[in-house]
Image 1 (cartoon, rainbow, N blue to C red):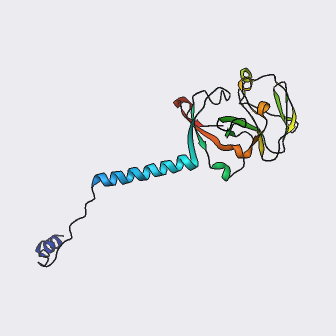
Image 2: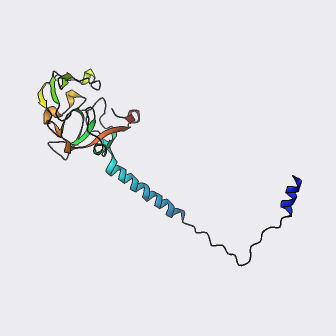
Image 3: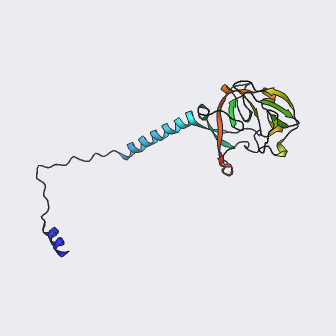
Length: 196
């Protein structure tokens, strides 16, 4: 092993000729890099908010206990381009009687379904709907005559049945009025999580 060390020690250092020159290192100001990263981050955030997810604030109590008044949630605005609206989805839509307002409700019936409500009990295609998301204090005794949901429309109800203005009042909602699916609650923190 000593021989190897001696060999390295005896090797003369490599010298560069006087004509060799080094290009000066290009330095980019830290502020420019920071600004570039900020612009990219803002562009990505804008894309997500405009085309994919939109933060919204729930106003009212018609979706209690699932959604509280003033709760903050994210709405997926792109999902229904990839998949169909299904029973049980919580959707955000333009109010049919005043499209400048937005409502949030749960889909109970899809196109072609027969909907009937007897003393607060919801029947879909003749079968009693199991609604574990409507606890007894939020039920009501209203009835609704049987109706077939028209093509490209949805029958929606609020979970707080005694406090909800929904398809019992304004009828089925056209598919073109629905612009997103409520997917995730983020405020208050104790409600953080996926919506069902």
